[in-house]
Image (tube, rainbow, N blue to C red; front, side, top):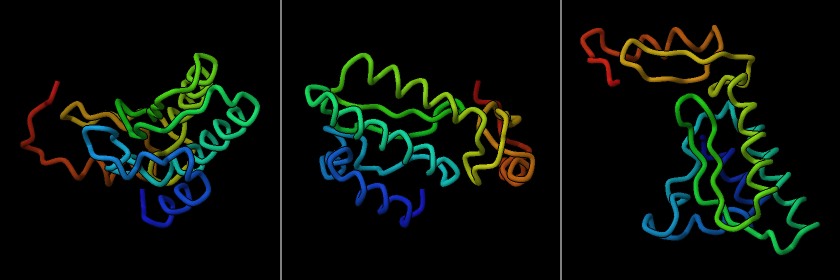
Length: 140
């Protein structure tokens, strides 16, 4: 995610991303947001939902441990919270499977000839596919 989007999330949700200054042994937020800018609106929506939930249920306070792309979908991990909050986060992350990770357009899951998976729109997919060497081996 670009620096402007990253800074907006840190500024608007400092309490949620407070572990970003911890070491990599303590929190993977030290690496920042490991996904494309197309998912920024969804990450923001999830952060707002968590903030609103914790205001209603202070005992569910949590800190974000990691935000990343995995197998073409958004993963948003927290330390703390409760089962209801974790389920809500998981359900919201499912939206990423229909949103281009790069530009936010409607998208589908794509697979490269190496087995890598991303959720991309028709416009963003060709450049991603071209980024793989034709001699690259399949990963899985």
